[in-house]
Amino acid sequence: MEKLTELTALELGAAIKKGEVSIEEATRAALEAVEQREGELNCFITRTGEQALERARALQAGVKETSSPLYGVPMAIKDNICTKGVKTSCASKILGDFKPPYEATAAERMERAGCVSLGKLNMDEFAMGSTTETSFYGPTHNPWDTGRVPGGSSGGAAAAVAGRECWYALGSDTGGSIRQPASYCGVTGIKPTYGTVSRYGLIAYASSLDQIGPLARSAADCAAVLDALMGKDPRDGTSLDVPAGGLLASLTGDVRGMKIGLPADCFGEGLDPEVRRAMLEAADVLKSRGAQLVEFDFPVMEYMVPTYYIIAAAEASSNLSRFDGVKYGWRAEGYEDLTDLYCKTRTQGFGAEVKRRILLGTFVLSSGYYDAYYKKALQAKGLIKAAFDDAFGRCDLMLTPVAPTTAPKLGESLSDPLQMYLSDIDTVSVNLAGLPGLSMPCGFDKGGMPIGAQLIGPALGEAAVLNAAHAFQMDTDWHKRSPYEKEVF
Amino acid sequence: MSITTEMVDYISDLSRLRLPQEEKERMTGELQGILAYMDVLNTLDTSGVEPMSHVFPVKNVLREDEVVPSGDRSELLKNAPASDGEAFLVPKAVE
Image (cartoon, rainbow over all chains, first blue to last red; front, side):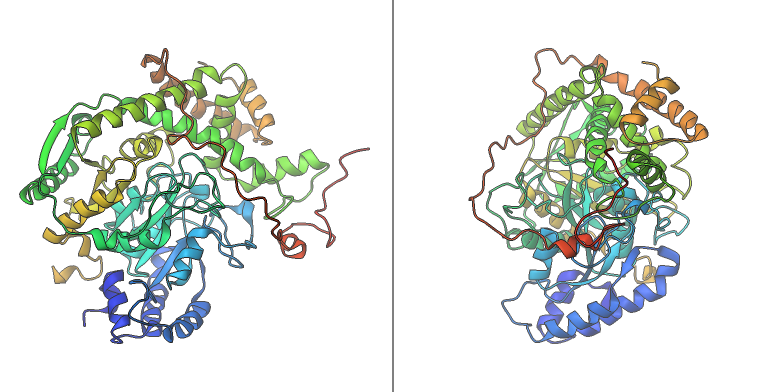
């Protein structure tokens, strides 16, 4: 058999079912990779290797034909998703050693599908950042070049999957936090339609935009994870009561007659020529399988980043007011009274990027500026949603870059926050409109860094998005490339 | 729109943050740059457009009125920086 850690999650799941490999063997192979690579990658904040082995042994007896296709497959979870009794830090000092007294619905559902969790993954503090450099626990490094960032905010998740430390991971995406790191690390990731995966137990950054989703080795792997994750949850009032499941079974790779839209405004100024070339080649692959390419203008792109950052910061300033050093987490020392306790804890407990967004959000919500910024952004959001509705009148899916460039070097991005925000231009729109968006590997630049293409679908269009990505992956092997098995290709 | 350090003081106070002088000056400049960029929204005609908070209008989400156990107090207090086993402890707030 191929080296265990190079299999996709579904291949491993199938091997476990056939009895070709035990869950404990798979878990040990992952733990060995973690042991070997964590020194240079730093994907994990908390490792739960012992519990994973115990769980692997306990699960073995339950292997049966009808169990989930991911039964027994080791994975890991972004550290903003609550796991009962296991430290959940959001990569922030302010949460200290917080051990949630309850389990997030998403984690609970993966557990029901028979996952083995290896631990909690590094991220930008409170999911605010595009590089995983704002983590209190130090940056994660990109497995393709450890001098480069893995992207963010689910950088630990993307690097762990690319670094062969686990077969899939749960991440979260508020403005691109699954898709952009997936692109930078050469893995496949999807942010599903807002409301299709419960946010119960996801520590909130911007509640109207946050969504949990998978990062994995293929579109089929992502479909299998979503089949386990999606569905109405009474504990999340915004979760949608729509039919869920069946995505994996629906993958045919047949895209004949499908209209793929290429919005001209996503291919303009600022896009790296190598990224553009890879996008057009990806479009050609889909065309060769019978899809039809259509081009059109999408003249709202310049409003995406300001609209997103106003709304996200406003919600963040409100959501993060709960961190005050009283009920859980870390508390500063040497305070004089209650207000002083709050101020000292928050000033010392939050990092610079989090403070910047809290202040920005407080400003846009403050009296005198609310109408000019926050209300204006909500109106812009309405127009952006309408522009997408219009686009999906012309095509079935949109194909765009995930990011204008490949992964930057460590230390290059943080000095200029505005510049970092601008690099989110291709992903934030999808959150504003609540749509499903997928990132799939579609090539490498001259420096050997992965390039990702984004497929955007209409609301609840996960099946079409995954099927197009699956079709692409039937004809290409970019998603199978490994930073450790380069000679194979 | 021009951001002054006084304004940063005001929103810091609302946010329960107290930035050291050096950080405050840097933050003022950064916020200034970010907000100046956001002014591009002023070129977008939004007259007559309803503000949209959620893309899928979900209204009046109700559940059955059933009694279910709430979190266990001692479990919840385990995460508190200071507690007396029954309550969270904070400095005296009322005279």
